[in-house]
Length: 362
Image (cartoon, rainbow, N blue to C red; front, side, top):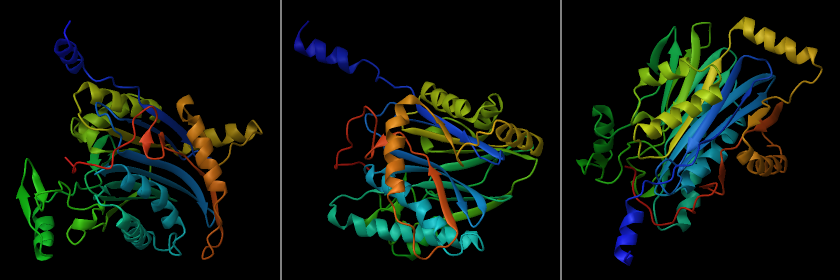
């Protein structure tokens, strides 16, 4: 076989897709369980990040979950993953006025990210879809096109809106700020970016804001579960189909893995990351809590069950967390644990580093 024939044979082979990295856990009070799965999919680089975290703030058990889809490289998404929730839970009004705390944390994180970008020649940005569980409240905030969907009473309900530049209100906001929206394969801000809100994107910051839209839902017996996912999932799944698949699998980690696996089979060409949070009814929560007490082996708050390929990274993140000093402006804040995504310094395990040269959000 000649060199050209050999090269063509390799180019015609489908890309090797590794099994998703996954993990999950159960809150100590037994009120919710969660699972996550993440895969580079058919892409050679990984720009998706996620965070699953449980903390104690002023005596409240707080769940924080997020999916961050980078564009122009991985660094913006990694920065948001590492800093957004820390900025949020240290906000002095986190418990008393959670919505304003979320807005402030988003904008402060974006401001600090932009400062860190001054040394880079190429723009980078990230979406964010986050869910905060405080008491009987679920607060979902987002910028960009990573989406949050809940199942309430068996019905699929989108609790976030994809921020696209062709939406009438977004287009008006961009044009009022002096920008423009044009068609370049899809509608793009300045002919470049396919989302109208994001972290980072320094050169388009006047038009591409990080102001989150926030929606609050009551956590009650009718609220069954929440799905957070990057657009690699939603490109090939409707809200209803995703909810129907999660209904079939009780364990949230397994349901997240199934969603990611099916998205790859359906032909998703993007990175795919999914977090599933399942809300447990009072009877289940009481049973789980009683079982833990009876064993006399109370797990740490937010104790995780993780896959073996995450063990080293979780240990590294735990060491980093334990080395941080307590913020001076916060009282009664007791960080318990933070889970890690499966990345190592911004790149997926066994993946090649993302180059500085980058493409815009597709």
